[in-house]
Amino acid sequence: MNAPAAIKNAEALELTFDALSPSIGATVYGIDLRQPVSDEVAAALRAALVDYKVLFFRDQDITTEQHLDFARRFGDLEVHPFGPQNAENPEVLKIFHNKDNKGRENTWHSDVTWRLEPSLGSILRAREVPPKGGDTLFANMEMAYEDLSDEIKEKLDGAIAVHDFANFRAGLRKKGLSDEEIEVYNKKYPNPHHPVIRTHPESGKKSIYVNLAFTQYIEGWDRAESDAMLQFLYSRAAIPEYQCRFQWENNSIAFWDNRSAQHYAVSDYWPAERRMERVTVIGDKPV
Image (cartoon, rainbow, N blue to C red; front, top):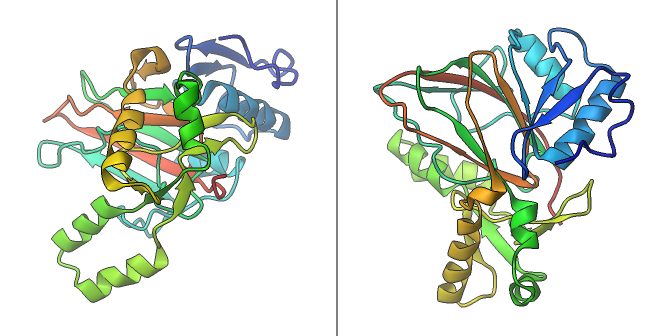
């Protein structure tokens, strides 16, 4: 993949981008996230994010505040309502797995599509990685859309899917919350209706925007037909030609575009420990 044409003065900014696969992902060199990120560098990274879908940074031994400061260069930050609550830094979602808590993020998905305005992107930092395993895969859903047949593209034009935080609701019940308490969450996060095929607000490119974790059905379709189409669309993320695979190291960072990419956290490292911290940039209403 060639360097994004939209990147301005990359050489002058001493930034280089090394593609991880022909389809998606690039490692960024020439940046120290312990230092404030200038407007010019932020603009170059944003352009690269849109093009590569996910950016990787190595050896970034940053503080939590530096993590937050970097993320804020790309927008306001969200607080995940269903994750462990962090009173000091509520925008930081801590993801920890060990022998007593096996990884559960091993499903292809885009983050928080159950929000009316899902996230722009997620910035995940590795605090402690297992000796082996625990990689994350990313899939280019714009490429997946491009390869659909004209017949399917036409059929999906204008189609709307309903999303829901069903898995988190089940977790709330498991914690012992009453129906009345859960209803508070239902009202605060009503089921959003998002296009099955989303248009990226910056590039104008179309991508598949349904995922196994949060999409429920296609509105107005026969349920069997909806289920069959969704299963087909979900399966597109699993095609290796659309993917890259990132092997984590301590202090590695991945910044992915939730508007055009899906990801899958491989849970092959149990019972070892894996400790990550995620900060998420608020997005806009998909169209």
